[in-house]
Length: 187
Image (cartoon, rainbow, N blue to C red):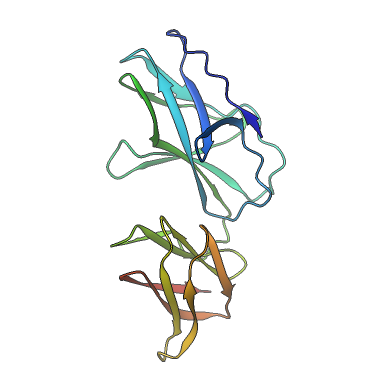
């Protein structure tokens, strides 16, 4: 990891990731689960200027992994795949310093379900490429996973986010997390 040294210049924006309260320009992650969403901090002191995100180089990723920029300022959120030397994502912004507008998603084409937003306690449930059910939550929450016949397979409380619960065989599963319920299909 490498801390972000803020320049605070009016002529250029700054981007960073954040771990706790520390702003980072390089965020070395030990493992990266498919569909991991990493919030980006974005700061500009100039309003109305046209900005753009463009990937110049992508390395050290599996060939099947896609890098997606998500802009949460649009409804629904705009997702743009970033490719090495591909097209840029262009946008405008007011003066801001926030971590809520943009995030990066790392996706593999073999994902069997998309991340589904559950109502209630801001929980996301999805199956990754290894047929594992993943639960992302803002806070600790109780969860239970049932098979299609209603048999309880696994239950517990999330200890971190994202949390990989277990590997499952092909089938349809019902995941209750917090006050919400979501169906997950493993193909």
